[in-house]
Image (cartoon, rainbow, N blue to C red; front, top):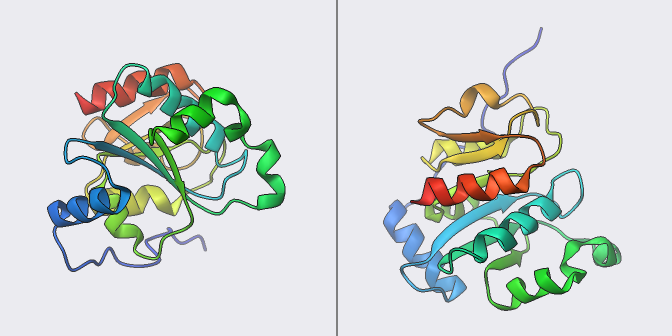
Length: 178
């Protein structure tokens, strides 16, 4: 018997999306006009952190008020393999167009505060993060062949783009935020 996967934890937070947004913008020291794109997962190749960072770089060149926030564990021993060692990625980290934080316990507040959720995984059979983002009404952008969630991402809930195509992903971010 195969049972469908649901949410591990119900989307519970005691504040509104507006309050969550206000709190997160304040925590990140960003202006109220900032738009937040969130990614969640360990910093590694399979989760596509390098693709997330590349998309952030491309979008930051055309939109200055967009900030990409990645929540996830980074093994310090693997830091040299992370794209952050590239000078252009280091520059957007410094300018806060790319922000990397450790895992957060109040994850639903982060989803609720975000304008978009980006799933940049190269392969993820059925990621809970898609369900979590959709549960609080945050649109999802993802690669079309990355996993078993594609039926959930419709024009009403987000957008799918060709696998590992960060040009298309960046274009979709700009379009969704317009």
